[in-house]
Image (cartoon, rainbow, N blue to C red; front, side, top):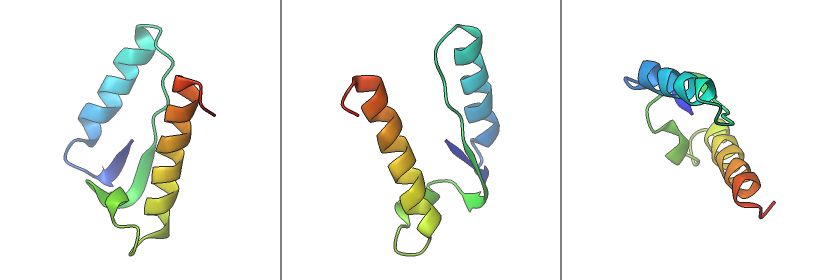
Length: 66
């Protein structure tokens, strides 16, 4: 998960691609119009809460608690 104005966006995308290439199930999302660490600003951006929910759901699936 990255944001379009995240200085680590390209690194995040490259990491996701390397994981996929290695056969690791990978989901990569990029949130357009946001900065690094936007997802902690739930009081300001509804999409931040959505991003948190998306990340939590993915972790539940991976760890079998969904």
